[in-house]
Picture 1 (cartoon, rainbow, N blue to C red):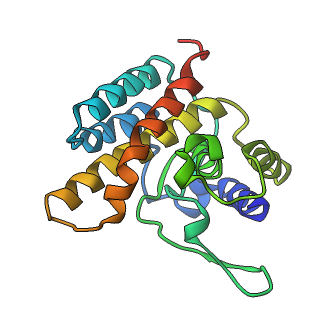
Picture 2: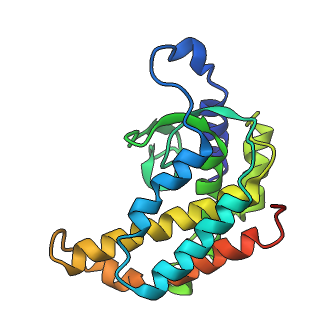
Picture 3: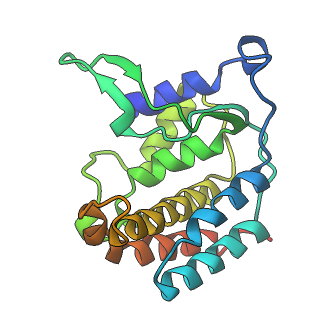
Length: 204
């Protein structure tokens, strides 16, 4: 996990204006946030939608002005990192959500994925490193995100819970059957509540 955080720092240091000059312009953070509103509204449980909208409002009210703008992977987490037997990183896959934008999105996602407190107990990640250690590894490797980390972690939990709302609907309506999402469904409110707690003391 520490190596993953250092690898993320390497991606974030990429000079995207030179390497990807004709790809796309930066996506404003407010646009990225509102993009997930459409996903959240697939929630079939009224309680999920209610708390999700409250978290969304809190995110909008405390939205920061990020300084670290550049390449964003979009789903930088252990499942998308390919390691060999000797522990050497061979590749990073699943770039379909990649963009130019606030790089705190990647860092917050990685930290949330590894934070046992963000998840309901039965879904807590198995990791030996707390999020603060991941942040230290990222910054020691030259990662440019230096602020608003709580906000980006809250956004990550809001996004994960919104995705789960959609996937539960797809399963229960038979459009994309996957019993895993029925088992995950009780964990959705936990993610939303954890996001809300991260935002409680942030300035509006």
